[in-house]
Amino acid sequence: MVKEIERAGLPVVHICTVTPISMTVGANRIVPAIAIPHPLGNPALNHEEEKKLRRKLVEKALRALTTEVEDQTIFED
Amino acid sequence: MKLEMGYIHISDIEFSSESKIENGKLYVSTDALKALVLEDEKLKDVSFDIARPGESVRITPVKDVIEPRVKVEGKGGVFPGIISKVDTVGSGKTYALKGMAVVTAGKIVGFQEGVIDMTGPGADYTPFSKLINLVMVCEPVDEIEPHEYEKAVRIAGFKAAAYIGELAKSLTPDETKVYETETIKEGMAKYPDLPRVAYVHMLQSQGLLHDTYVYGVDAKQILPTMLNPTECMDGAIVSGNCVSACDKNPTYVHQNNPVVHDLLEEHGKTINFVCHIVTNENVYLADKQRSSDWTAKLCKMLDLDGVIVSQEGFGNPDTDLIMNCKKIEAEGIKTVIITDEYAGRDGKSQSLADADAAADAVVTAGNANQVVVLPKLDKVIGTLDYITKIAGASENTLREDGSLEVEIQVITGATNEVGFTTLSAR
Image 1 (cartoon, chains in turn red, orange):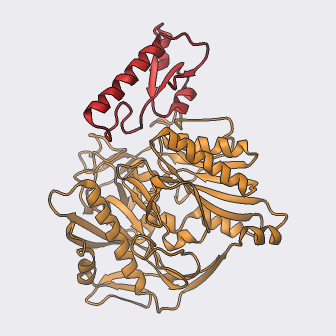
Image 2 (image 1 turned 30 degrees about the vertical axis):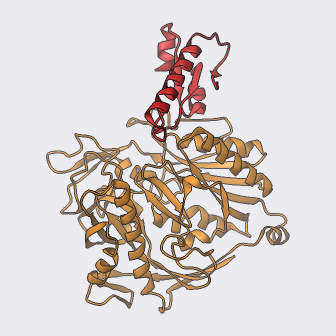
Image 3 (image 1 turned 90 degrees about the vertical axis):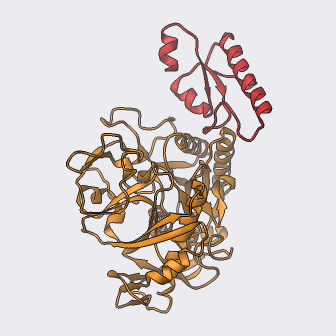
């Protein structure tokens, strides 16, 4: 899906836990997620902390979306 | 470490007032077994049944398959850290009851348990159709969490298998086999010219009822470590798994791991089998990276020439598999990986979720998406209530004539990734 949307001319950020698979399949902007059963959250945190974590992830993804890349890039921080 | 395995062949099972083994026949007191199983307050009831090869019987949903064994000499007892005290097993003498198994069944998570057909095309796909199966269907108390029920059924199976194994303790085995490997230094001196080979055994540890235990430790929490090859024969590794039936390793497979047995067979002849390394398949990327770093580090420290890596399950563990392969190869050690495929019903899709050029020697156990039709059988042990929900089935699975159209994914052991399977290619 990442590749097909990019082929249509729209930049895509792939948020995923197993970044090596994302690299193998050819995503260009990759943001590491939390864990496979809960990629965008963490049940170990309380609601407030989890909300912060989620916002941080979304903001990071938006930053990645607006960053020029030369090659496949994993946005660690 | 040296282990003498005594094999006692079981020709039939019969329910009886007294539990015993006589002339190769197992007599089981269901009252005694029931009392043992219901010691666990999480279980309300248990029923027993016998399924023999060739009978028109379907067992589902299957959770685990276990071979009854008993420790006759040497340290520890079977299933150490689980039902026996923690002690290093794998030496002395152990008896195994061949030709039979204890099968645990019941609903648990429903969609991730398997099917064992004792006859017909389904039977060809599962190695467990060739055994006389003592099936236990455990019913939990009301309002129990699935993970508590899983644990209760898991332990009940081991207790039943140990109880039956114990009946063989004073018997004379029909067949005896001695397995022995040396310490690192002894092995080097004894076989200076043989290639040094180890087995990297990946254990399902994704959590959420996808777990394996090593000496009672949840494999999610282990760092890769080394075992003597004979330790698994005493139940050092057990299944706590409710994942796709075709490529999970039931406890029976850990006890009889064909990679371990084949490497032992070649030990001292064509290879020096240095050790059995266990590692995990966790759901955090950092864990995947740490564990694969460690397997590669251990392989390097052991000065290995070659490694066989086996996977359990599919999907994200494909990444653990490829990471292990890549990092071990990068240390200059040759690898062969054993996996299976999810290549779609037509076999045309990408087989694994991850890949790398270093994975240039791959053994496949088959395509789990392959479709088969299983005819209606006369008797069901367990329940067909979940048959359309098991991974590999669909809402169209149950056909009008009572037959089942399913992917072989639903069949326990069909594409087992340690090669404990009956599938082969020409």
